[in-house]
Length: 367
Image (cartoon, rainbow, N blue to C red; front, top):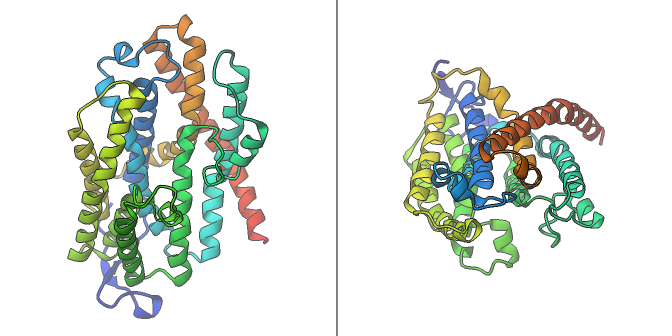
């Protein structure tokens, strides 16, 4: 893969005359697919080998070598958000608001609906595990708005989907306005300023709920990094990314403090800063085409597993650990469940996401 040639983006097409666009500015970036899968596996490792739901004994004692690493797997969510800012800006650059809406519905809902049903059925049929939610709550979960409506999630990991929905709502405004360098950069600056101003607001404040100062920094940085990719780096964009990195740290460290309660063990805080910095750094390398020589074939297919794997792994895995742990050694059972989740994720992608997504897209196109 060679570095694309650079040429002036026409002002009439919405470009900024002070910026330079790149030919092929929306490529298939396989490194990001690989990173998405790494992020999903990191979150899975946290749930399976650090938080330990379903296992009969302390997971730190069961997996003493893996626990110190898995304990930071929750940071895969922050990497997801960073990549999401980059990818959403990239894929929606030439889309209308209608196209943006259709693409997000088709991408999010088919696998999510299947995961809701599969998780609910698993919890209902596995003896001795968690109790399924009332059917009314399960139906509310199908909207993906359960958090806003005060309804419990079918699976705790779904909280991140409501974060994504709020990001889409905010980005839809600039998509409706028309994506140009100046407008998107202005959007980043306004969102960053609002995040700083509302960071200390009560958690139930409506504007704070929309602005999301806990997680906005990753989306903003991802968008700025895509602007670097499309228009080449400059000092302003570098400043936005650096600002977002520094501003994200207090919230990341706050989450780290909470993980001690979830895991029942504390781990050092300094790896949090290192991992967040590494996440920003590797997406920055993608944005600046420093990894353009990498032309792996497998990550595009592996990346397709990421979303269904993320949706399905936590509660179903926990139920399987609780059911099967008396009958299998921990290491073997862990390997079996991870393999089963990967196979299930592929089946969902192949036989649910793709066909249902096509039909959903055709139906929405007729509206």
